[in-house]
Length: 328
Ligand code: HSE
Image 1: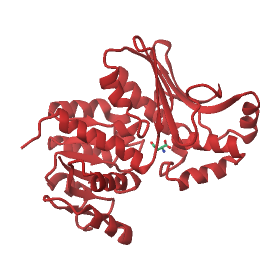
Image 2 (image 1 turned 90 degrees about the horizontal axis):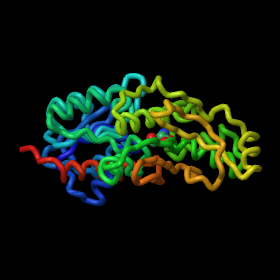
Image 3 (image 1 turned 180 degrees about the vertical axis):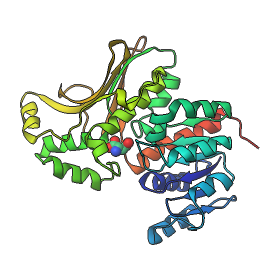
Image 4 (image 1 turned 135 degrees about the vertical axis):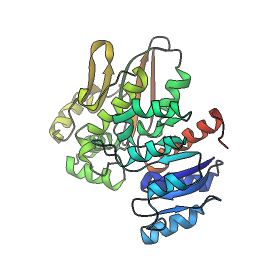
């Protein structure tokens, strides 16, 4: 598979490093960050590009933009891993549309375009005979989309609930275990690279709500929008509230929940028993699917991180290789 990689932050770097290290049969022919780009249809020397990026801050030529790479490089799949903009979805939305119009498959970790324009983009992908895959948008390394489309494909999904934000889970865990203040724990989460570029998305519950929208639209195709979600974050929680919860064998977790039959669509901090399957530690995420035949299935895994997210992205690329004809 030939791939063009747009975005060279923590996720993009993880993808490039894993392609170079694990050699899964993916050749990068184009690469771009926010300031520069590079095209080499015979295959980019990934180690050299990463070193250039590390020392200069650029991955290529400043005269070559991400849009130039998307329009001119020879590739089968666009790997779009630029930062999420939940309000406009840009610039990722434009990148994805441009690649779809060139009949290129899309693999993205970008929540903005999928939460805002899933219906339009999936219709455009279908019309052009290509895939739109976005496993990395929800749950980091957890293969939730593969589970829904393959493992549970004969099931009706009745409800979904989960811990969908690694930053909040990390903060809550650290506040409870070490008595850190909210600010101290948030600073740690940012240092670990879990938080969004603007961490208010994480702590106000917006990131989890975006992921819930993506899950709801994937499962039920019901046109759910971010505004439909009732959202409360963890930013006003005090160490006292957590201490009180811990005294009673309970704890607090930010839970996202969708149950269409009960018109429930919410993200909020909830008091739950410590032995509940959604009480997980650190930056982990957990997703419980309530189904008619399989009953309850809970998946737990790393919700954020460079290499962990690369796992979801490389899985999507290899899925496309195995399920779609290679274009000439
Ligand atoms: N900021 C997100 C989180 C990253 O903390 O879960 C993964 O989407």
